[in-house]
Figure 1: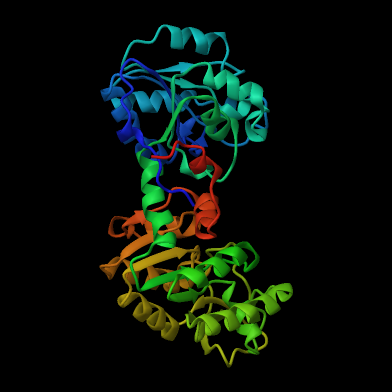
Figure 2: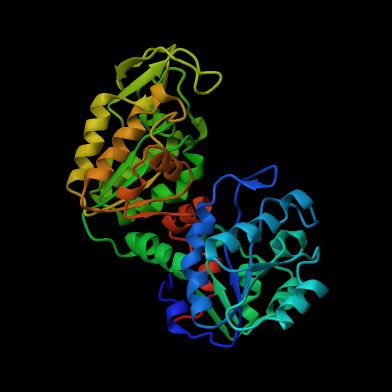
Length: 402
């Protein structure tokens, strides 16, 4: 995997037109942005391009307009909020075809250090198909392309891959650089001992990740709903717990692989069980803890028990690098969040480099207030999973090598 990419620090964009792909896919409620983390995360790269005296043209997708203009998915509110965050006007180029007359005129009129934002790239149906016409439209606006959108790096779209192939200079922004440094290098070149923690509901979502990480890590910890398929593969009664019967043999193979490679594979030794799944998800529940070898046939495991919390926390103590993806239980329910909290706490207390691989684990760590204590929290769910699988990400690959 080529991880040695040119970044915004390797170029100077003074007087040049720079197209910068950001991840402004923020949640909107009645036209108001309800979580602006992604906007704040993009600021360092944007500020650097402004300070260099570039003409900064920002672009992003938002939601899934499926190739047609949907006013409720317009990036207009983002331009407004970015203007406030940057302390200078971010001019919004309202164009249903994204690169239309309005956008072209706005770019023509730019002075060095100006910023404009294009309309939602997914208003164009070519975007998600990496169609040539839209890539050419985007490339026609700029001299330099900067990709700072890790959240879509695992997809080959016009606004991150197509356009990069049509400009001479294509580099990564600070956010992308940080993801490559932490996630990419943690997997390819970790400081050992390297402990990987995987959770979440389904084994099927993590097949390649389990396989790849077993080769790379020293200890692999498995919790969450997918642990029960592994426990079943060991011949345990798992009651009514989540199970993927078609993956029991795969789990047996992975247990054997760990043994053959001399890797530690840690599974839950006890489980917090409930009678029936809470509805709504945060409703009060009555719990009983059982050893993993003695679960009743009529109960389901929904979190790791206290012995497992201790086992997992101990494994983290001696680590130098820890990657965590996926909660340990039904963490949306306060009664079933203890395991996820225990793991977050263990990571917060270690001196190791701690990397949270996006999605639910990132949400859990932030909600629980441990965000500050982690070395890196990935901004991409799907993209970080594919990085952990050892796949090359198209959005990263498209940037120029150093």
